[in-house]
Amino acid sequence: MEEVADTKARKGGARLCSLCDQRRAALKRPKTLEQICRECFYKVFEEEIHQVIVENQLFKPGERVAIGASGGKDSTVLAYVLSELNRRHNYGLDLFLLSVDEGITGYRDDSLETVKRNEIQYGLPLKIVSYKDLYGWTMDEIVKMIGLKNNCTFCGVFRRQALDRGAALLKVDKVATGHNADDIAETVLLNILRGDIARLSRCTSITTGEDGPIPRCKPFKYTYEKEINLNQICTYAYFKRLDYFSTECIYSPNAYRGFARELIKDLERIRPRAILDIIKSGENFRISTNTKMPEQRTCERCGYISSQKWCKACVLLEGLNRVCQSWVLGEAKALIMMAERK
Ligand code: SF4
Image (cartoon, rainbow, N blue to C red; front, side, top):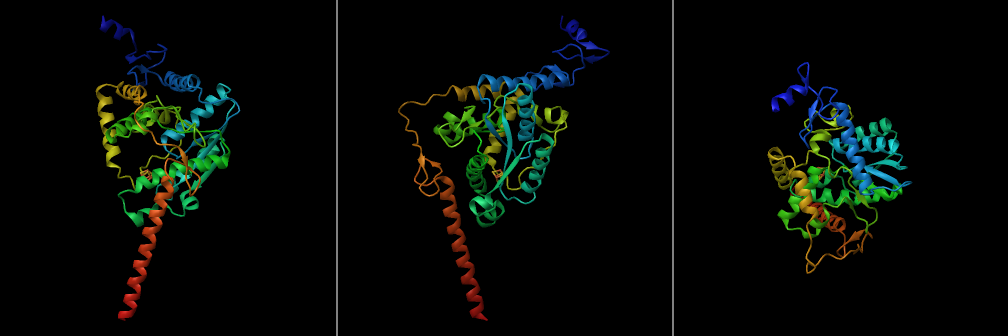
């Protein structure tokens, strides 16, 4: 029986698309393992994202939406697909690209060139905010000062705030980010491993920060990384020939996150649904009413949303400036001693 079905599904030796039954299958969908043609892949890929947007009411007509754009595969595909869906389904959105320049030579400067080309290709206005302007430091300078151990902590905290500050400058109602299903499953695992209850309870929400300055949403919450673009083959970005940047950050030593990522990939190899099931587990997670959650207030120093007296960015900046002062003092003392010896 299986053999008959298999023979029926082939035309001139080529397997037919299991959705349209007309064209040659060009790929096996990583999410469902169906063999489908390119045209049907574009259709189901875009339609699934449209359904997620509609069912979760991610946008309202007339809203200004900034797409967090790094020049990487996820945000480039997001910018392309959102512009297409906005036109096709008359969402009535004003779309913008918003990029953060962390000041990483040989990485971010190159990827920002890609975003600048995307600005022209998709006709979306671009705003770039930089760590140097906002905090007085580039990541290159931070790494020089603190080394490669905690650099991603600084970078993550600064980026979160930088995106909010850029969104405020653009006067947008929402920020859409390119976080995909793999990223979210990975964050669920990391929060479990770290015992971070507060983050675990909100990391699967499709829209976050509704109580903060500007809400963020993730239209790719159920989209597999492999379908966006992994290894540059058989994927949306590859087939559509989108212009994106694929180099890893030169300061990317985050071993713990890397471990969670590998674990997710191993699970996906054995059972593709594992990614969606981890997200589902996170969604069904309930916090006991006895668990004390951090209180939301504003930072006494910069006014940004915070659960402490100072927000994390101000605490990190204070530490950084102190290290810098003592380093400068140390250098000055060494120079004086050298001069005295002469
Ligand atoms: Fe920043 Fe670390 Fe990401 Fe590089 S890898 S962009 S330093 S968070």
